[in-house]
Amino acid sequence: MEKSPDAFRTIREVADDLDLPQHVLRFWETRFTQIKPMKRGGGRRYYRPQDIDLIKGIRHMLYDQGYTIKGVQKLLRENGNQFVMAIGNGNLAAIEAIAQRKQAEAAQPAVRPWPSPRPGAASAGRRRRPTGARTPSPAPPPAAASSHRASGRAGSAAGTRP
Image (cartoon, rainbow, N blue to C red; front, side):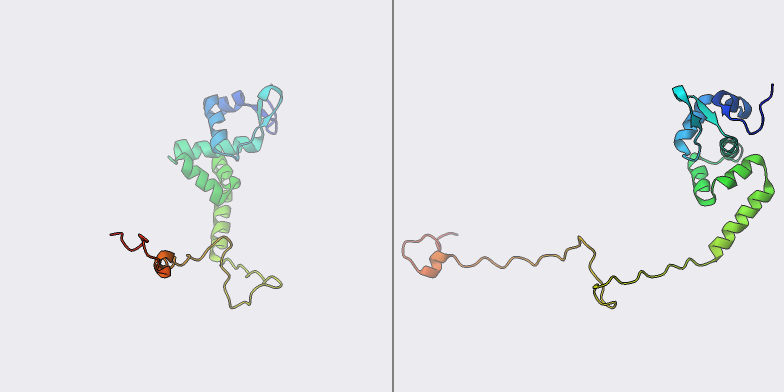
């Protein structure tokens, strides 16, 4: 009996469907924090359909496109899970839409408002020194004359050193 497309899958089923060893899936879970299968009693993994689509995309990028793990991590960071999932499904329209949205976001300058001054803070024209920053301490003054010399006592050995 065939499972429904929305059913959860075990690691064995996913590994067989994607032609990957099970240990590779476990390893990818450590490298890609976006892969989060449900774990039931005894640590048994159940993959959601979204997890499987993401794994398909990661597999395609690593094995078919020649990306490194760091390269795929960067793609996930910059473009999000949906982009890699669309790649795994071969959904060119979704890939194009995500790429256009990213370009539109990059074209808009990022505007960050300046923080408003705190009440009682120094005037707006003055810059405050960061907490923990110190100015260099001045050099110590030259050593003062020995009290023996100043007193002028006889028999003192203060002035006899070479």
